[in-house]
Length: 164
Image 1 (cartoon, rainbow, N blue to C red):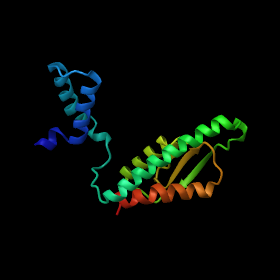
Image 2 (spheres, rainbow, N blue to C red):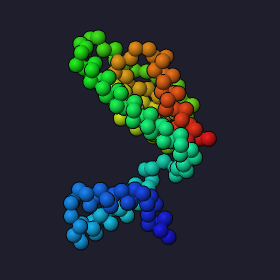
Image 3 (cartoon, helix red, strand yellow):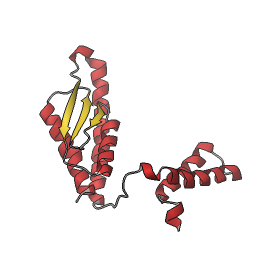
Image 4 (tube, helix red, strand yellow):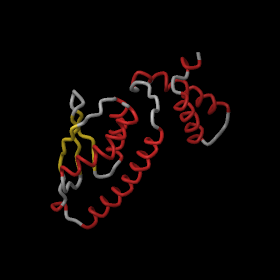
């Protein structure tokens, strides 16, 4: 019965807390609205979420999260340095097509988030059969090395987490 009204309890809890933090009050109307949002939003967006995820390898997921956060920080510094020290003509922007082995929609969603949150890369397109990913790279030095980096640092752990 509870699963029917709260299909995603963690999302509901997060929405409830965020609403309270945004309003900075604990009056009855705010608590009621937080509760309504915590129940309604997950119910209304249930069909938008990929299949239910079962965490298979939390250690790998933690290592991937730390790696991705570190890469995002490093990339932000590198992009900032490029913007401040190079002329636009000397920045090698390019689209890169990356062959993918991962097919799980949750893993692809995580890969999209990692790529979109990392400065210097932008998700371009995913082929209909999910076998190729088109990324825009802000400063591409070696296409083969970049493809290997995405496949080894992100795709391989995502496959281990979601498909093994």
